[in-house]
Amino acid sequence: MTSSKACRSSTSLEQPYGNISTRCTPGWHRRPLPKIAIPFNSDHGKRLFREALLTDGLHGYFSLAETFHTQAEPSYCGPGTLCMVLNSLNIDPGTIWKGNWRYFDEHTLRTCDKRKPKEKPLENVLEQGITFEEFLYLAECNGASIIPYLASNTTLAHFRSAILAACTRRLDDVRLVCSYNRSVLEQTGTGHFSPIAGYHVKEDLILILDVARFKYPSHWISAELLWQSMCTIDPATNKSRGFYLVAKWPRDFSTQCGVDNCEDDNEQNLAIEKRFCSSEETLLLFIENHLRPLANSNLSFESLVITVLQALPLVVIQQTTKWTFDVMQKYRLDAVSKSKCAQECQCVNIFQSYPSFLPENVSDNSVVDDADCRKPCARVTRSHVHAYAMPTRCALAPFIELFQIESNRKLYEKFEQMNIEQYLTLTENKPMYLFGGLSSMVDDNGMMKRIEYGLTAIFFYALRTDTFLSSVGLLDSSNVSNELKDEINYAKACFGL
Image (cartoon, rainbow, N blue to C red):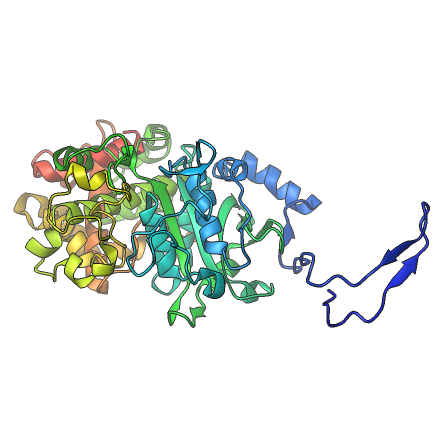
């Protein structure tokens, strides 16, 4: 690479059509990828793409490719990535981009963080870039359902489950964004954001659609190496970097009120109770071919559960990851909309603790009325709360309380006695975590385990059919509470059962 300071002279070259005088041009024209990265357009990269396509590892690629966005400024990797992800999920920005068209780019992003000017949500980003937390502010304030995962609080198995959800789901309804350190990948620079568009399961390689296309092209990289690059500490926050799962809120009922149509609170709360996800394919065939013979064995309950978990294929992991993502978002949204944090968990009121998250044009009352929704920042409602701001013990307390009801405790306690958490990381081939949609940014490890016991109970209740596990009394859900039955039926819908 040649810099302007290194240029001392110009050269005249003889060419077939006359002499061309070259001169020193300042700056850089792209960078070569290091050897550990496989260029997307190389023969090797094309082979990986073809193989990943044939093994269902590129379901997230095409929506991202058709909305591919090059970051507008050298420091805009975060906003540029977010624009591409929001457009690929077909989220309406609710504001004009150019002409009569509504579309996301860095200039149409809006903020609900009062520390930033409404008209300049990217203030200081040009000089300083964007942090892990600020990406969350922007994503939620622009209509995304997003869960953050600090690398320091998750595992490589957890990350692989997120990759599966983003790259192998045929519904193509979730995206994976990584915040990582380029230097670990032997690239120039440090902090960077980009979306993940593909996964080659056999070779454990992921496809990064680098939004800094002026610098590096899209490339394949080791999932483990990218994980290591996310584990580095960002000096701006003194926390590790990490990744996000991003989706679209069902019916846009959560963080945005349409400019022309604003649902009231009763309608919103009703929508919260409805299904978040739909099944992309049923697990009945897998149960029939692989699990049903187990029902006739003489295995103990503990051995049966462990054997079932060890037999689960990748398609189940991506479905359970999306299911847990939606369950977590449902409870978080429910806690915010009903102010459960203040009333039931005896936590400090979130809107008093985090006033910067509540825009000036939104009422501080518990009811968001039609007038509030129709003010200039029409997409901002009280459910626009940053994921860090809602303490997990508050948002997920109602989920844990489900299993404090006497009729719901038996299976939960059985998994607690088994220490079932040790079996939720499935080790066949590459380690994967069964409940990859569960963010482990929780207040204590004990709470994480209680959530896992509850999720495992619902998962096995949902797997029980007339021909599978019907004789296992512990899995009979006929006597559990109606609230738990709703969760079981929701899980069945997600798994096509």
